[in-house]
Image (tube, rainbow over all chains, first blue to last red):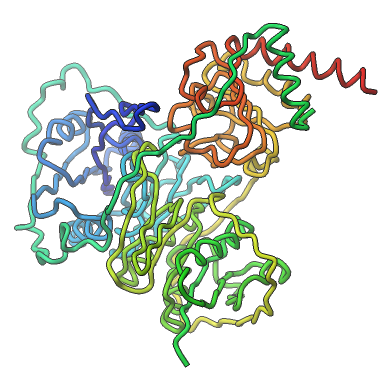
Length: 264
Length: 321
C-alpha cells in the first residue's frame, strides 16, 4: 500500500499579532511551520505505518528550497521518501496554477490514497485538495475528524467528517484524496534521539519545472486566474466604553444597562 | 432583446436559509444590471415558499444520485452551466460547498475566490474580499475576465431582505450522465448541541478566563434566556463542541447582546463578531483587545461576575412578580 501526503509549510499565523490602535499586522518573528491540518495527515499515516510494515509513505510539498530542513525532519520520523517541488517559475501561483503543478507530478505516480489537510493557516481556501482531485479525477473529502485504522486497506477507508452540526460517517473506495483536520488529534511523533541528525539526503528529491515540463504560461502569475489586488486591515469601531469594577456598583451598572436595553 | 445576465446559486440542503441569502451577493455583483436568478437544488424538498425570491429553481431529483458526492454533483453542475452559461456561480461555504466550488472552478477553467465576506464593485471592476491569515487581514481578490465569475461565500455574513416575491419557475432538470464517486454515507448523527449560535439573540460567551469552570457560565445564560458560545481556547481544550465556537475558525455571530467572559479578543475571535449592537466584556485586564469594542468593561473575574449578575437578575425577577 502506498500513501502520498500533500503538505505545505506556512508562516505560523499565531505569531502574527494585531495592533488595534494602529490597525496593522505585526509580522515580526513569524516562523515557518508545517501546516497543522497537513501535520495531522502525516501523523495518521505514520500511525498506520506502525502496524502496516508494507505501507510506503511519501511526502510531497511545494515551496522554496528553504523548507528542506523541515522536510528532512519528516524523513527522520520514518517517512520513506520526500519530494520538494521548487522553482522560482512557480512563484506567485494561485490555487488554480498550484493544483496543476502538484497534479503534474502526481499523474504518473502510483498510490492508493492521497492524504492532506483540509485547509492551510495562511491562504485558508481549501482549494488544493479538491482541485488536485479534480485534475486526477479522484473523489475528495474534507474535514476528516477520524479514520478507522482497522478498516483502512489498499481499497477503501471508513472515516468521519464534520459537516455543519452533523457528524457523517462515510466509506470511500480508493484511489481518493482525503483531507484531515488538526482537530482529529493525530499528532506527529517526536524524532527518536538516535535519528536526530540522521543523513536522509538519499530519500529526498528536489525537482523543478525542468522535470515537470509545464508550459510557462500555465504556472506562476501568468498561469493564475486570481490575484490579490488589495489588502485591507480590519478597522474595528472603537466604542465609548465604560469601565466598572466587579462590585455591587458595577453589577448595578450592568443590570441597569440590560434593563434599559430590554434584555431583562 | 438584450441578453440578461444570469446568476446561479447552489442551494445546499445543509443550510438552505443561508443559501437563499446569497441572493444579496448576486445583487451586489450584478449591481448595474437586471439579472435573472437561478437556484439549483439537488435531492431536497425545500418548500416552494422559501424559494420564491428566485426567478428559476432548477430541481434535480434522482434517487440514485448522492447529493454528498462531490464528483457526481460537479458533473451535474457542469452540465447545468453548459446549458445556461451563467455570468456568476455562487456557492455557500458550507462543508460540501467548499469541496464543490474548487472542483467546479477547475472543471470550468475559471478562477475561484473562497469564503468571500464582502463585495466591492466599482463600475465594471469587481473585487471580492475575503479573510486571509486566519482572519488577521482582508484580501481583495480580482479574477481573470472569464465567465462565469465563481465564488464561495462565508456563511451568515450576507442577509437578503426583500419583500419581493416572484412567480418562481421550476425547471425539472434531468442530467444526461454523471460519474458515481464510489462514496457511501454510512451514518449521520447530530452533534449534541441543539441550538445554532448564529440564530441567538443573546450570547454568553466564555474564553480562556473561564477554562477551569466553563460549564458554569450557563448559569448566567439561563438567567438571561441566552445561549452559550465559546472562543477557540475552550474548544481546543475540549471543553465544548466546535458548534458553539465564535471566530474565524468557528462561526460568525450577530446577536443583539454579546457578553464576553474572560475573552481577550484575539483577532481570530473578533473576526466572528458581526454587527453586534451591545457588547459587555468581563476581563481581569481592562486593556484586553476586546475591551475597546465593548460598551461596558467589567474589570474582574468572569466567574464571580456570572454569580453576582445571575443573583441580581433572579432577585429582581422575584420582586417584579
